[in-house]
View (cartoon, rainbow, N blue to C red):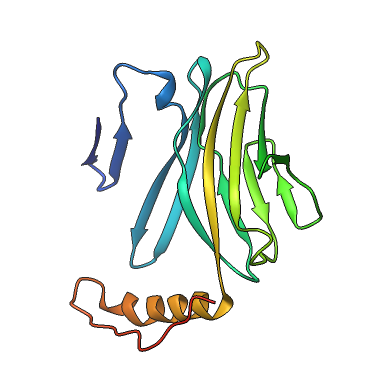
Length: 173
């Protein structure tokens, strides 16, 4: 259950209450506050004792030439380690890839044809229990990525209003 209220001093107080916790409730939770002065995000990890569990990740897109970052959505506690593989080979395999102890994979200067493919995240406990989920990464060309960024820049000021955009021509290559 989540909720919020305004205190006697005018502060907005928000909370999350999990009344019957399960291993799958573990993970990183974020709270975002935004107003005309800006935006701030606070994240905290909730550890729930139990075997490793990873939420499904599906498919993500990366833009060629940019930095790609993804966190393994693992829960369970305690976790001994989290590893990433690409097409069955443990990462990192080169200087452009970094795997952090918290399960975050970062790839610098994403390259089409090299970095797209099937990735796996595996979380392991010291008792030998593990869970693995797959992630498909599709690398878009720089032109398409720039077009999406331009579209976002055009559309953002009009959020809440109807905006019509037309892509005249696009090549998948």
